[in-house]
Image (cartoon, helix red, strand yellow):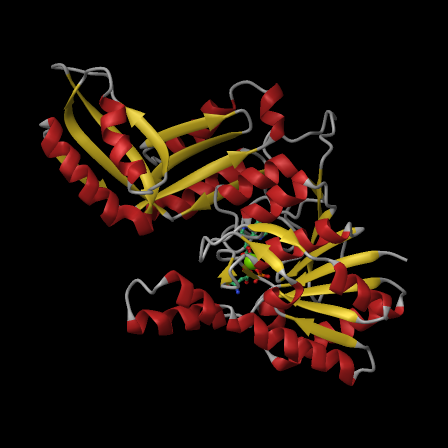
Length: 411
Ligand code: ADP
Ligand code: ASP
Ligand code: MG
């Protein structure tokens, strides 16, 4: 008998009918003899609706109060699912993050899980109950409700699986696995049977929202067997695995990730002297703004241009801080651009293949897409381009790296 944690995302519990369908599915697993812990998200659209409500009161809602509110979405779905299970004769009990004590730090809206008390869940499982836990939420040491950041139910699922030493954590969603890229953007994208934790972590952090980044970090750290599956279609899904197969067929690129979440700032004509990068980025980091990509131009006239990207939500703040720095340093000007996008190719196969970046640049050049910034690591290459070319770039790269699904006859 196995212990399985199953997490169902927003669209999978988006209506009462779907919740009934999920209950049917859980019931079948239970009848197969496995112990089941279910984690659910709020109904699709609900978290956005709650955030919009808060923003009608204040553009920047108090983080603690926002957590009190947005955590209610999941409280509704746990109760509905538990009711649907009980109606089917399956003993079940629902718990909020506070009730099972998912202890987090106090960083409201982006809290990190510190500890999970597994006693209560174990006692329920022993008594034959399916345990339904609210995703996305926890409680800090002072008893305040916290939430784990958007997409955080994935992390609840994996953290519970780690705490309970579950045999598998299954993430049920509206696609049948992890694809070479977002199948909504590239219809020729292909489902991957397996992807390594390392690659999945890069994909998630570079914009593939199929799994929250922290859930992958958790799974890697605690070695939780993790699988992404379709909620209502049969299939093997995608296994996130530790082993990197050394086979001839290892593709160079496993996937393409992209995001539109960043904005670019340039400070022009700063003196080219030691310490200038620190003078520019010190105040940015002091303002608690994370910087992603950085480029500094070769100096001419003893001055240089310095460009970096930040999250779009931080753009205005960062611009204000930078204007201040510019006047202190006597820089020429500050310019900004929010209409950028980042496209990344990811794959452990890159380690053993040269020329991957140039192949990427060639594919973009063929589409006359200008590259504004570049950054690389051992298993990824990212570029910043104009946002309007994003989809074209992703499709071109998908084809250039031979990731397109073979077209069937008649298509
Ligand atoms: P859930 O509500 O179940 O958590 P999400 O919307 O968070 O679902 O994640 C699933 C979505 O992730 C898919 O519908 C798909 O559009 C998107 N996605 C982005 N990149 C990928 C990828 N590489 N593979 C699969 N899905 C992806
Ligand atoms: N309901 C939350 C969100 O929409 C958490 C989740 O779905 O994972 O972000
Ligand atoms: Mg999600």
